[in-house]
Image (cartoon, rainbow, N blue to C red; front, side):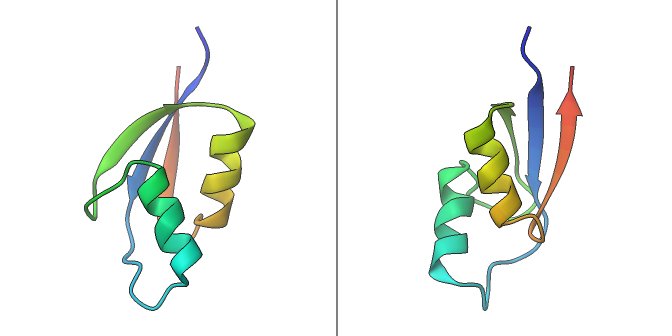
Amino acid sequence: MPKQLKITWTKSTIGCPQTQRATIKSLGLKKLNQSVIKEDCPQIRGQINKVKHLVTVEEIE
């Protein structure tokens, strides 16, 4: 079974560039403190890296 990531949106995007807001939205996050579970792949890791100051990430086995 491939690894999964639990991504939680922890900080607001007020004052952030539009590209970072779009990245949060593309990860499937709609509300602050919401969590989503995604497959661990290079594309998701790149999106997380772009907004790493706004989210927390946990690896799920």
